Amino acid sequence: SAVDVAKADVKTAEAILQQAQVQLNYTEVRSPISGVVSRELVSEGSLVSGPEVLLTYVTQLDPMYVRFSVAERDQLRLRAEAQSGKVDLPKQWQVKVLLANGDVYDQTGIVDFSDVRINTQTGTSEMKAEIANPDALLRPGQFVRIQLEGAVRHNAIVVPQKAVLDGGTGKFVYVMADGEHGGKVAMPAPVEVGEWVKLNGENGWVIKSGLKDGDVVIVEGMARIFFPGMPVQLAQESATKG
Image (cartoon, rainbow, N blue to C red; front, side, top):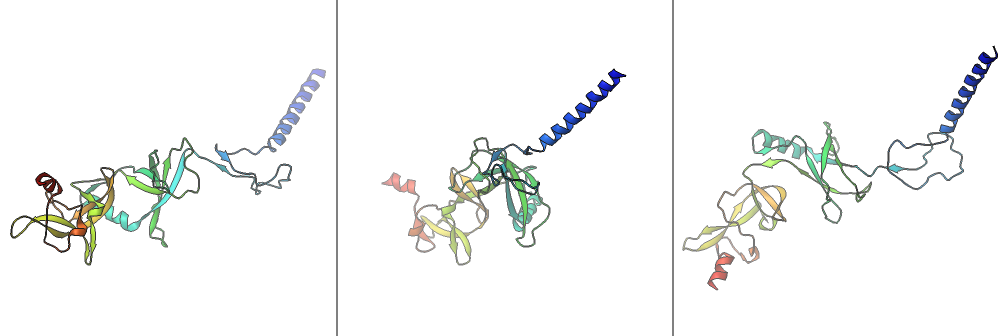
């Protein structure tokens, strides 16, 4: 009988200990994520009345999530070009981040969420990308620019951005053509432009229509072309003859 009473006392003591441990755990606030803690919003020693009191912010820095919007017009255009076979769209978009100073962040992310809804106020749909941030160079609240990569445009023609000019009826480039009296002349060619891309480290413009394979586009000295049909000469030819 004394043994049974002692065992019951042990179980009672274990229950009291377990309840005390639960009460002790209530004194700790555990973060559901790993990250960097911001400044305290409640000073040490203050009474915290309940879970509705905000103590601080915990920010996850690796990986980071970038939210951005894509215009419905651009989505419809890409979809139409994909259906016509002009563009192959990727199964998963790759993301490059451009910082406020223009530098390209050295980590590439992936798009892991694309909202099916269109915002009625902005005409855009939201997308989210996940990107590694091992050195904490990206910070919450930063404004960045996003480049989506992965689509392939077939038989694309790209010219330097400086070669594309604005006219009264739209954009055009100067191409070299045969003159009526011999020699080469500069003639304007109306073009339809597409996306901006990188061409040999410089900004280039995709030409969707208006140029064909073999056209020679003038990219330097446009300021000296005072009228269509003005005689022009290739720079390397001038250097050779000089």
